[in-house]
Image (cartoon, rainbow, N blue to C red; front, side, top):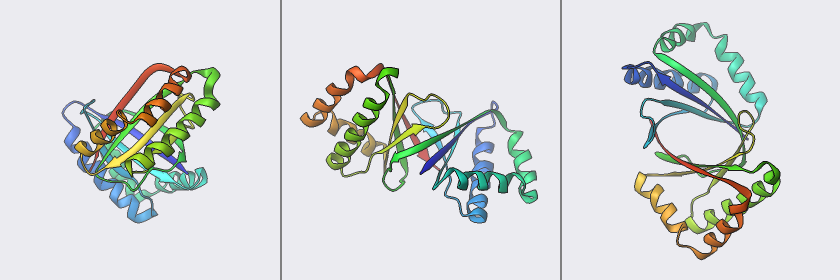
Length: 202
């Protein structure tokens, strides 16, 4: 399975228009093409962003979707209007090597970067952590590796009904002896940089 994400930075003062038109456009595309994309905004980070994410069974499915909507004359006017609100756009494709649980109202992404000489060991360690944390929390932890972009990044993905529940997961892990032992095993595999982002689905 694959996941695509589009990071959209609106022009100053155009965030609400971008959210409104973007959400409506994604709803139409999901109905028309059977996709399952979603829009979200960032919490605790840059508030002037809109994210569009989607899951795909294969890259062929994603390619077919892109080719279909790019040639859809009915959507051309909406695309042009949407583009007039936007300052910057960036896309990324990732491969899901461990599926997250059912999408809920909020998401968190934990991003780490494996040292280049430890790529395979880092991925193996991350899968073990995903399995352990899923059992510990009762919520499936997804794991995504990049297809485009930084090839040494690993991303853990989890969903919850509230920000409180997202934070409670982390607090629960951080005092568990088994998790702490796993964490210590992975310290030498990763660069000393770890980033956490929260998102709210619209």
